Amino acid sequence: MKKILVLGLLSVALVSTFACDELVPKQECETKNTGTLSITNNSTRGLDYKIVIDGINYGRVKAGSKETFTLTAGPHLLEIRYADHAGDACSASVPTITQCQNTGLSCDG
Image 1 (cartoon, rainbow, N blue to C red):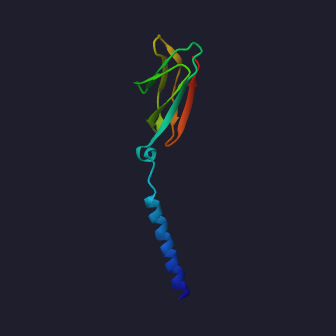
Image 2 (tube, rainbow, N blue to C red):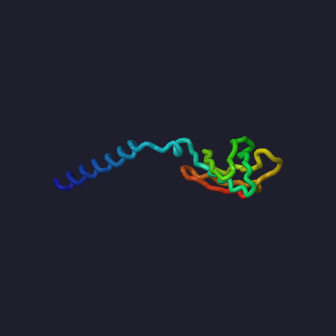
Image 3 (cartoon, rainbow, N blue to C red):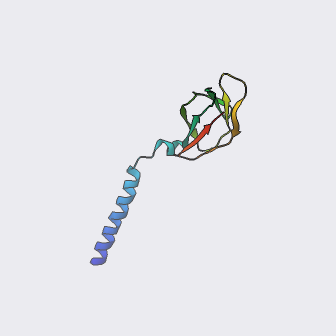
């Protein structure tokens, strides 16, 4: 009798554990396999940066500010250029975005 009761309670506990896991909603970053990239503009000349990721223009980061971009997890080619002037503000890099985490970079150009 004790064995049946113990096995019965164990079965209920296991079913409850699996049921709870199914009820916990996944974060959007888990379902979409994304993370974020934060870029801080520390321009010593007060210039805005143009952000180009994988050849796509993601917009500007104003002097003295920070912008965050959501990207798929994995490596990405990042170019930080001057927005209104010719040339790169910082060297091109290939940051790896981790799912559901933030990667932070700054440029002082």
